[in-house]
Image 1: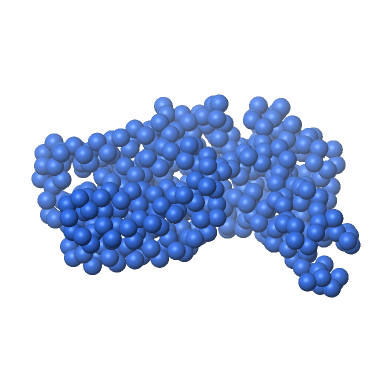
Image 2 (image 1 turned 90 degrees about the vertical axis):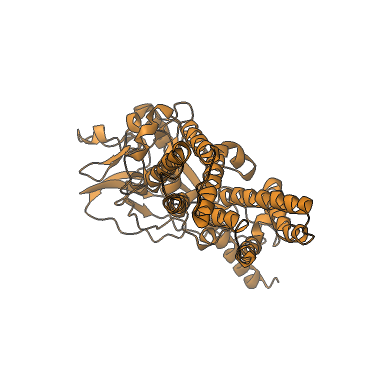
Length: 456
């Protein structure tokens, strides 16, 4: 029998007693049980629905599957338990979980999440959040299977949440004519009341908060491009540059962790974690670069080139398993494309570079929506778009100065595209699906009202 939650949105009054009980019982940070609100602004065309959600203890938990440190276990009742003493604080599970359940505790450096008060339930005592709910909106259940909720805003990613939702699709409130909102007023985000910013990274902050990941990938891509170029030329890359880049990348990746002392656990889950496989490939590539420096020719260039290609692919898979959108797979800022594109500058025939430039230009055009985001992202996007034609203009004269300027501008464009990749990376998250679904439903209701009242 699997254990889970039953939540009746029709009974929830957003008193937050469940959240407070979770904090007091387990000593977890605020927001471990999140209180969301559908139609937080109380727009008259729609109902106001409160949603109390925590970990859904899924049948196939993406957090446990992706955790490189094996910090998650699943007990006999299907309860997904996180072990803080095993967590290295990489935060990858926060990308993988579509329900925003695992949350990083910035003060402690590791993840915290609901564990369904498994110690209480082992003694036949219901979880603290349930006993604290004054209206009976939140209840405990045990059953063999949990059917999909079939609700538009709840991400259905095939992982089987142990959750039964009731009265959470009552979108229609009383119709008020004339509406307090004019026909041209935009629908507002539903938001949530206590942790709206928790776990969300606004565009201007992403570079500041994830600079280490960006620097890590840029250093690995640069080293990989050098080793791929070496393989194509059949020569060994001399000097310390690839080794220094990879060693620096490894150091940056450790510094990124909330608990750096547990970095060794990153290799424990290579069977199912893309992040474990990424770290393993970067380690292999670093060892290869070390032997190339220590004893040039000991490792055949082709072996180093193949290791570099596999490393770039492993980096991309970390992101693709969290954001499965086709737009990200066609993004010219992905690690594999960026590395190969950089190599194409230095090899013959020039037609290869031209083809990759056309593919990059097509990708940039397809991502024109980036120009409508924050000023920082918009500026990076326009810079990336301008570098593509400017590089060809600088190549045409064929002088040493213009060729050097073209190379610098080309590499700067590749870096800018990689930064845009991070901004365009959007793992499935319930906060986003609630917001988007509310806007869609609100527009439908507004259009319906226009037709009913004869407004155009």
